Image (cartoon, rainbow, N blue to C red; front, side):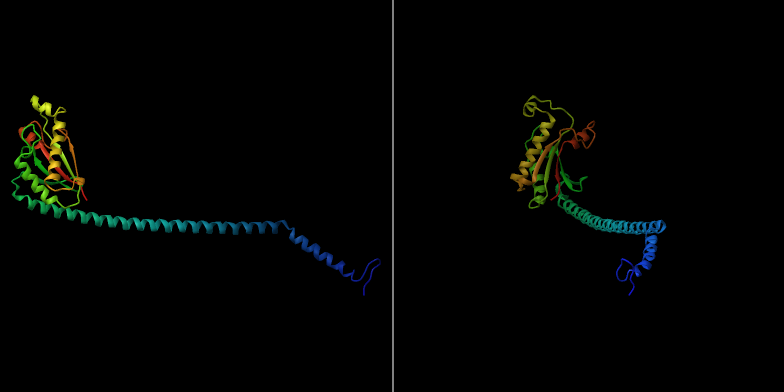
Length: 239
C-alpha cells in the first residue's frame, strides 16, 4: 500500500486526479463554449416561439374560415328565402288581380317598396265631399278587400290621403278643426273600423294613419291629379 508522511492509505492517486479536474474546469469555463450554448438556447427558444405563433395563426385562420363558411351558408339561405318570398308575392298579386277584375277600377292592387302590396281605393268611392261617412259603394269595395284578407295573418295598415285643397266650408272645419290631416285620419279610422266590425278582420292586425296632402301620388295642379290624391291605401305589411 502507498503511504505518505502524515497521510493515510491511497493518498498518492489523488495527486494525478487533480490535473483532470483542472482540465474539466477549463472546458466548463470556456467563454466561447458558454456563448455557443447560450446561442443555441436562444435558437431553440425562438423556434419554439415561432411554432407557438404559427399554431396560433393557424387556429385563427381555421376559425375565420369556419365563420366565412357559416356566413356564406347564411347568405345562400337568405337568397333562397328571398327568392321564395318574391315568388309567393308574385303569385299573391296574380291571385288578387283576378279577384278584383270585376271591381270596375274602384280598387287597385299595387306592390309596395317594402316587398308587400296594398289596395288603393279612390276617395270618391268611399266618401262624400268633405265627410268621413262611408258610402254604400265604399262599403261594397271594402267588403271585397276584407274577403281576401279575412283569416290571414298579415298586418293591415290603413292610410288616409287628401288633395291639397284646404277645407273651406264652416261645418266641415268644425268637424275637422285640424284640416286635411284631421280629415284623412278620420277617414282611415272609419275604414279600419269597418274592416274590423263588418269585414271580420282581427283588430290586433289593424292600424291606421292620416297624411293629409303630404304624400301625393299625382300633381295637385290638375283636377285629375287631385282626384288621384284623394284616396285610402290599405297596406299589407307581412305576417
